[in-house]
Image (tube, rainbow, N blue to C red; front, side, top):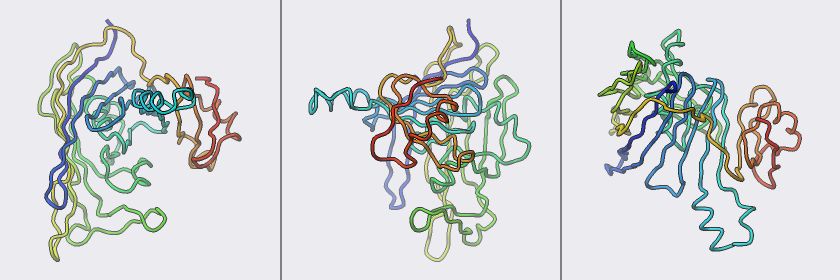
Length: 314
């Protein structure tokens, strides 16, 4: 019997729009966790993607893979059957950090909080934590910004949260012209902040030495103009329900597998190289940082044009 556990289940997200309309996003998930190593896959019912998957082995970098091989195969074979090899079957990203900030797959970020955040929360020495939900413009969401928070974790392994509250710090983070970041204070009386999101696990189960949630919710709140005043209203509600959970019976790959031509956006070198990101194509494995550095002169700084095919050395 191996270490760690796996969980599968379903989720429903309720979107409360400003005009009073309600939208729903539904799907399923499966995840594998062993200490600081984790891999999470989600499938949304309203997308053409086969699945979105993210994983990490070291609490230092996160790999994201969006597979659209089934969609691509159908499109290519129907329109361009002789050029199938030139079409990518997936898109990938590599991030530095240990908290997943995935605007295209926030469900993965929330599942990480529920099932794989024990080590991260235990390492926090103040009341600041990184949000797992979209709280501002993309610029801020991707840069590991922390917000004030309060959380309570279970005593049993892997010390997962039973409740976590994120507080707005009194600022609105958005963008100005040309996508530049812009920060403005909240209107009174919310200049000192307000409750931005609440995570709560409503039930748990025991798997060997582990105590893991089987049902949890995350609710986000926002300010809404109401005449000349403002009030805090519910914005999104995410509900997750586990349908199966068990201990790992065999070794697991915690980094999503590259299975064909994949367009990759690499964000690991922003601070060290003075470049925001690199773009390249993979065909079998994720590259090490050394491989990227050896080939970086061939990479375009911005997307577009022909991307180099990078040899794997991972």
